[in-house]
Length: 208
Image (cartoon, rainbow, N blue to C red):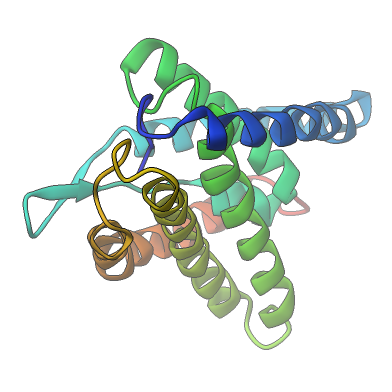
């Protein structure tokens, strides 16, 4: 799901970075100050888990693969901006040391996988939780995965529209290749991961 360096031109990466940097600063100041010290161990643990599960590629039909995010769980347990910062750190480490994603596209990847999906999970959960908390977690996590995959595909589609020579793959092909694994495999596993991990976390932190 990561967009690698070179796939997007500065026409997309520069505005994304300009929009993302102040959001990183605000989110870090707002959610990682002295008042949040007690939450940091749990946040760090879930961020480490997100890093691990994002490095596990899940084979899907067609010779491609997909992966989970772990970000919706952070958004549900804490806040979408917490998840955004944590996912951005995961993406930075992956880009620097593991060759996944890239530095020039860090802003775009952070927005797609760290912010848009997290906001989706948080909003859907708040809407559905009164009916059934478990159902709310399942639906929120599943839809967060779809939004993350969809926005990555949209970014690549925008690049194709701006410059087919730079990114020659048509949007319909990119969107289909990304969404079919996300809808059929990754979304289901993301929902299952969120339900199980949240249940275990609340056993340890019953008032969290």
